[in-house]
Length: 543
Image (cartoon, rainbow, N blue to C red):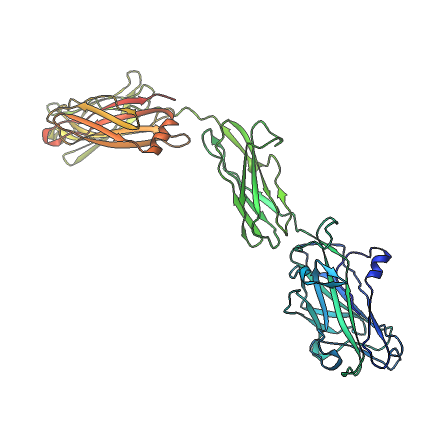
């Protein structure tokens, strides 16, 4: 007879008796029988991911007269044997089955792949002590495993007291697809074992007995829980976005389709009680035993401390796992933005070369918030002069009256660059234009943004040629300052600009921080020895 796997401890005498199946020997000279008894030394519960779980099959001879004489020897059939063993699969085991009928696994209960049996088994006691068995998975729908003695040997049972105990191990690969006992908590599965015994010499007419038995259910639990490491995006200013990322490790044969749920709790929920302010459920991406996921982004509407909790929602083979409220990697602060740095409003009202006195004369208005110095570069006659000029905060200007080389003075014109580096509350700005004696007489009108269009116009000397340039500066929420640049052609002493602004620019301006500022710049005209001039305007105030 045979015994196997499965598992739960004996559940009362009735359960034990239910495991006994007596099958009659095929008629020969007289009647005989073999009794199959299942031994279940496994724990009542196993877990996905367990390896080398011990199990055994017990084969017992229980012949009845007249075939229980001392001269009668039973032999256990191997797969492929002829004679009385023809058609037998040998010593076989169906490791997992979710539906039994009369102790036999039926097709609707087939569930291969739950367990993986060790490649070899060993005779642990009885007449097969020390024998080595090879295990082979048969090509059927049940995942049936055959146990075959090495070297063509056979298990023999010389008396009714004879037994053979075959020990093996198995790994738990996954949870069963169906539940053997739906009314019992957890997911249960059963296993069955079978073999045939014949009286030696096991010829075509030798008596045989087929033994079949099954075990009561073994509960297969999910692995885990796994570990979850999280890494939320950093602290932000109001208007920025928060995200979270989770890495789940220690998974066992994870099943596709699993998800990670990210919950974000507002400052009013320091213990993460109550509803989250934001929930993002994302599919897990698997790489071996690890899964990763990243939440969607959330834009907070209030300042304070926000707390993420990431939860691996589990899969068929792995338990769920959730982080804890207040973990350092999951706690982020949303702060009130500092006032944006103010525009420097640096413009050049006068930039001329006084040839007679060899001096560079510059008057450049600048915001009263500015401080420090401005870096100055003057390029003319193949030479470059570099120096700094102080910011006169009291009078909101930069004043330069500096002696220059005679070659530059004789030329009477050159390229002037003023670079203000910025300070704690003032943005940096650089201006580059021509210094010369002839004024450009730039009169710029204040630019406007209305109806999705930017408009600008003004007057300039009729001798001026080229373009007037317009720069518009603003600070999108949560981003650095953005500068838009445009150019308007000079025509008969006038210029005009009328352009449609892109939708994304209009949206950013509508949600900006601070003001919208502009600079109108004519860089100069060498042929007429005409200097560059500029003007600055606030196009739109603070929101």
